[in-house]
Image 1 (cartoon, rainbow, N blue to C red):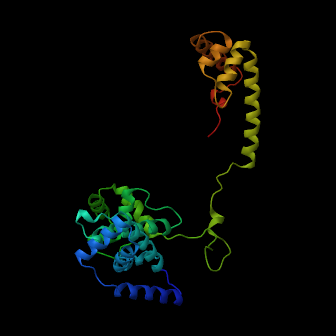
Image 2: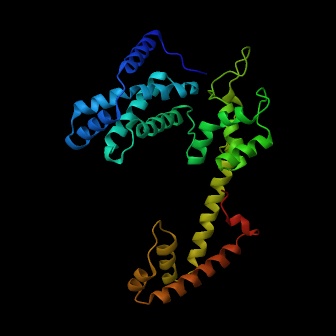
Length: 295
């Protein structure tokens, strides 16, 4: 749905557009002179004249993106930011017209704004998705014989994927994304009922019974582990506690210095202790999977 500004905002936008169109066009030589004065002497008057002369380019670009449902004034503001970035980076000695250089910055600033604000769900996080977002509708209108179709045909998706050099699955995903607008979970399902969309979302949290069973199993596993550790020698328990029962385990070299043995000996003792623990734990359960925690 297109955004509709209030009357005061519409008047402000119209005033800015009219003033932009009244700015005189720059000749190539005068444009070069202004850019050089700004680049080499930080002449702000030259910068202002250069920027004002191309605000019409911002307005023209904003008009192309007006169908994305965002305020025209915001698009223009973002375009002005891009125009200022272009002026800050422009190198007049490259013999490129400022309008050609600035057009890319203006368009990029507006596209970034649209991707950030078109939906509360982040859209266009990769270059391929960004290309799809801004070209899918145009290409669909170009290749589809029946505009009334609710979705693209498989052949249409393949053609778009080939032209934009993306996977067909990405075309299908973006098509579905563009077809569905954001909707609040508090929206009613119907005008006559009180049920909301969120009432029908499945609760992914564990049930009370699962929580209780998990707590019981956790206590039992802790008891089994304590009993198994009790069967190890003091030195083996020290190694397992330092290596396996801490967030940041000690290194073999550190334990070797502490116990007065080589780090290879520590590795051997750790391996032997782990084998003892495994055998001891398996004796306490009938099914090995009972020792595993569910994801």
